[in-house]
Image (cartoon, rainbow, N blue to C red; front, side, top):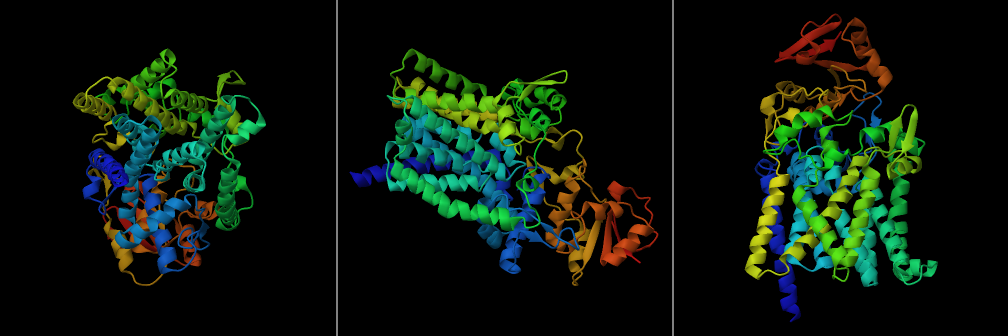
Length: 578
């Protein structure tokens, strides 16, 4: 009997995994067939991320040095780089070593869809005990527009899979208070903590909310009951795990990752509260389909781009979907009319989670003249933790909540149907949701900031992927065997709408492996910003061998006084300071 149950369990998850893999391949097509020649998403942040995977691998496996200091960027001084995502960086290492950094990047992006789906399915099935409804929850969470959009641009924000696993073992620990559940819960929380700081905050808020709910719903609201929400013995275990793993890691992070910095504000700068207003969710963001939608995208694109208010489309893709929303409302409606239903506690908890996320993701204040009238929890968040600014990312918690409630709504809809009808009804719901969330081929103008410069040709895009095309000048630099330093023009001094160029310079550094002046001291870069005899003299003194000038951006009429033209490529000059 036990063997039969185990077999059924694994068959159960096997089919779910297969479905999730198929949807992932379709949603991200054609990247699964071009894992080393293209990368998923647009040439913005992914360029810098792929460089980081490359440098992380090279520094550890080839140079035997710390990846936290990069002497090859910002030459001659080099720069310190904080290890913001240690867990994901470590996960990338074996894939980068075996198949290269581009494959590693793509694999972790694609696996985030499958793993987040499995995590959400596990959480939903544990709470509502219905495989069809749990699959609906799984698909909504894994392929939500929030996840798809960030997978195209933000590697670390795409790793949403750890949160449902952490919550699963929180619920398990509450029900069955043993060492195993306590240890696994603690481990998953630590994994979340060292994957992304936003997700750490989200998970912590959900845990606190659940604790408060359990305290208020106990027979007597007393501190003893509050503590007994989780067995004290197990809480001690979680605390020990955090102390053993978390405290040393935090110590290493803050004292060794950035030895050049002396305060937390310098590592994570304090944000102006206006930035929270810019990156907050507007009511229409929740109900407007993404700009890449096959049918509705063309109708909402102009409105979305005109109402960014300084934000960008990736951060404002917060669509929850009408089908998931209706199913979630149906679950709440059924709960109100039948509070004795088996999922009543789950409905309450995830409704609270949804309201919590809405409270944090809405604009922090209402500007009336010079007054700022607080209207949401994000105002309080800024007072406590001013380093957080993109509060629209609380949409992840909203999607998790809607996913669970929609699963419960699906269960209620399927309760009275025969098994064959359940499967067909579930498939219809699934198809509707996938249609609502479907990404399709799109032009780069649909996803970039309107004011940002993208120095890439249109032929470099295919669907939502970027083809990797290496300009010949970088192969030429790679062929020069000696170790030397270069500078690329135009020189970018932040803030600039051309900051993507610095990421491009880093991306191609993987090919030539020469030291870069770019990305270093702002004072030095300002003095080198213009191509003239003065900058030539400075570069010569700094030991810079070549200036790589991209004339399609700088213009062809450049002052080469003080330089010798060494090589000409299409739209690129290689100059040597004399």
